[in-house]
Length: 294
Image (cartoon, rainbow, N blue to C red):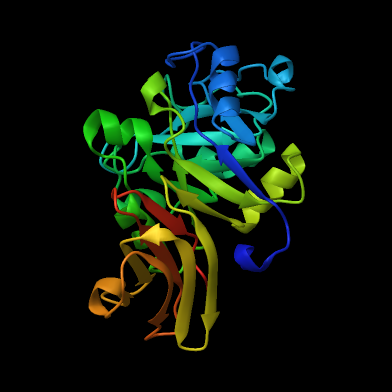
């Protein structure tokens, strides 16, 4: 993938999983847009359960509102269903599987009626890698989900993400809110490099992985130079390079560095595998890059 930190385009902040009173969200669509506009967001996807909320009347408040829906696929191997965020959805087709869900194999066909798919909150759903590895049709998984974190303690899903990266899947990681309660708003987001804030530009950048995700820290730059990874970020307590093979990676805890960290260079022991970067601030909030492939 291209390095988003090396691209001369503006950063856009967005949330890609949001519920309103049209399903199980706390606020009307209008109030939801107000909250995210006031929070400095540039784009927002309204992803009500099994409903495509009309977003035409929600434009013009300083951010782009994307049509979307959250639908259910499954059951998975262990009986859990897979929740799929369908961005750019224009219609939800009739379902051929069991009531309330699509059959697993249908996921590969979803781009016939939406722009792209993201697997929602895999840790909250207690999914296994075997549930997702055979499936096609999704660009990423939610590496963090605010509502799942605040509601059940199962917000982060790094292990599922890494389990998909290990065998070589090119899968992005996204931080989202879900927004089942108003206090869950504006906590997790993606920072996206796009030509502009139009839906086609946002979708194109998402497909290419030109973003990082965060619950607080800012990542200013990441460069891989031979066997070194250079990172520039807002003040953090720890920076980690995590490889896509067992036991491969390093954290700043193993290095003699002065805190807080704003610039750091970490050794890359296996340049032949993909790596991703995590930055953690004093409050424990985290930012995640997408994987860099050799």
